[in-house]
Length: 411
Image 1: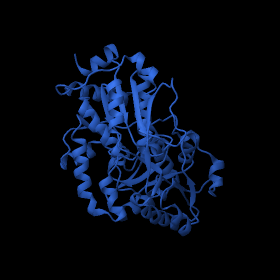
Image 2: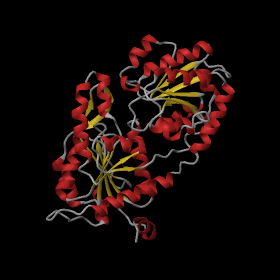
Image 3: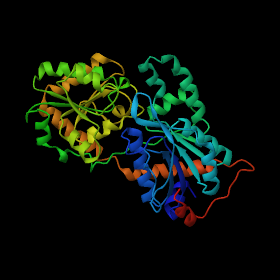
């Protein structure tokens, strides 16, 4: 019987431990992606243990919650007060997993908590799966720490190669990682909530609040306001647009280390801060053109959110944009790192507002084809494959509590 037949014939209930150093209410692509995975797995009847960083002094998971949660101590990441890392927790994880043993540990982040989970799982003989979400080696160059890129790559390679698989969102990223020695990459494409991100949420009152006339062009950026996001290029591209469309407005949704500097240098822009849920979806749908100048993404969920919201996209030809933007039909792509081509793409899209909105309609139709159920089918298959391919070493501890007992422990 194939793995798929096993899952879908008797709906095998998996016991999964998911370890992450970022999770909602933190707002970033990794946190939101993993939250969607957890929701989908729970809906399908799997038992999920979420091991994450404690998000404040009153963060105490309640007994009886559908999601079993272990919140562990963490620390604020310098320069990113809204993000945390997790302290090492090897002993705590050994204790919990000896009693409440998962079939598989999936590790999302490669920090101290993630490495503790890797070490503890290997000691107990529990199969390990990982996913690659952040190009830390590329980030280092934006903080004058380029000399760290090589050791960071070596660490990431060492980390991920200890697992049965490394999940990545695109074939392009899989090939890049394989070229630097990652051994077992598997593609898990992303999906998008097209009910949440929809042109139907367009709000003319919000546009008025931005100072945009009904027929004015609103250009949107969503993401961290940080050096690694290449924001200066978005600003230069918008200024080129503004020379053609004097009434155009640039709206920035997000926060980060560059916020005070940007506000001081460009008070004419609209700063919306962090947004989420329906509020975020309304901001997308109320704009006309999405600029995404980043060169450091492993994927870029915001690209899918913009397309689903009915926005044409100007971006570089890689990651989510390469996979989902149809040049000339739902946006325009510039060759990777070609700044002049990016500016040209943005200004070309801005020339004809009617054509731009037609591209947005096409973008929406393409996103309607990204079915979340397919993603969860694939995720289940990959997890079960990792479980079957990994045989616990001789002498590994295999004791675990019954499912009924697990739910009472509030893990």
